[in-house]
Structure formats: C-alpha cells, structure tokens
View (cartoon, rainbow, N blue to C red):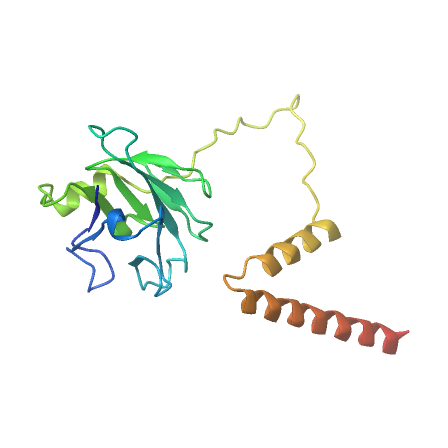
Length: 202
C-alpha cells in the first residue's frame, strides 16, 4: 500500500509545489518508518529553512490478513516548529492514523501536504485547502476588572534555576552530535571566561 503525499500549489519549495511524492513500502524490505525533513537522506526531502532535519515520520503496518489493507500513521519526529494534524500539534513520536484526503502541515499552513490515494488528483482549490486547516490560534483569556476585593498573585521571578534550565535545553536541542559537541565547547569556554573575570575582580 503506497503512501502518496501531495504538496499544495503554494508550497514554498518550488520543486515540490503542486507535485505528488510517493513511497512504496514493498520496495524497502524490512523498513517500516519513513522520514520527511530537511536532511537530504530523508525519504521525503523538504529543503526549507523552517523544516527540521528530520521533521516528521510515517509508519507503515502491513495487513495481518490477505484481504486487509495496510495502515499508515504519522508522528512528529522532534521538530523545532511542530507538525500539525487535524487542528493540533502532534506530540513527538506519538503516532496518529492517516488516510486519503487527510491534511497536515509543517509549522505553517503554507507548508500543507495532503494524503491522496494512488493515481488520485486533488479536486479542492488551494484556498480551500489552506482555509480548511488553519494554524492554531492563541486562546484568548478573559481578565476580570480589578476590584478592591481582588488581590493579584505575585509575579514569578526569574531565578538561576530558570537560567540553568534554558542553558540545558539549548545544549540538548542541536540536530546533530557535532552541533551538540560545539554547544558544550562554547558553554565551557563561557564558563572559563566567567571564572577568570571573577578571579580578576576578587
């Protein structure tokens, strides 16, 4: 059972816009997971700066009985900007079933893809596709007017623990082992400079 993905007409990667790419799992013996991302070795190569090296993945489960069809699923693969499916951002490596005419996008509606059946053509207009699957909007929170009986909760102060947490996230968010090593080296150099400066002051 092939997986066919249609890249919408206004897709910002010119060589992909308006095209359909497909994967036949039968041609890959023993392979069940297929990747989409900016890395050239991905099965669906999407060379766009807002797309992570390995942005999302598709998993194929073959049929258990001869008269059944195989099943495809989608999951985010730890992307920085997110994979959106059925109006929500997918959790990393949390699989969701997909079928023909399902739509998903990478970060923004302009990066919309549509699951199509083999040899199928997309009938909907481009504007309909984008409008039918908008990006999630921030939730508005109603704030009651201040009154004498209402006391505001104290604002949380930024602590050294918060700073250390942000540094730890930055160190571990590199897309490659080389990037991680580079970030650790830079952090070590920064720490050494701080120690030297403190020593000179004292």
